[in-house]
Length: 77
Image (cartoon, rainbow, N blue to C red):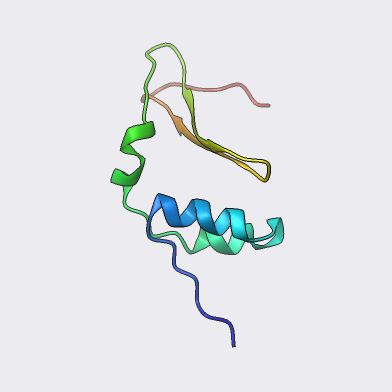
């Protein structure tokens, strides 16, 4: 029987993503119960456009925090 996964910190998320295959990523992401405060160090805002804040870039994945001000948009891409 598989143990239920529960990711409760940004550090746990990074370790889980590094240790598992891409096919497991949806399960890992659905298991997240990470307090928003874990992302405080990565938050940056721009009055002109949304920001793409890199948390980590590895050979397996890139984890970004996207920040928008109210009313900002991005083109479809």
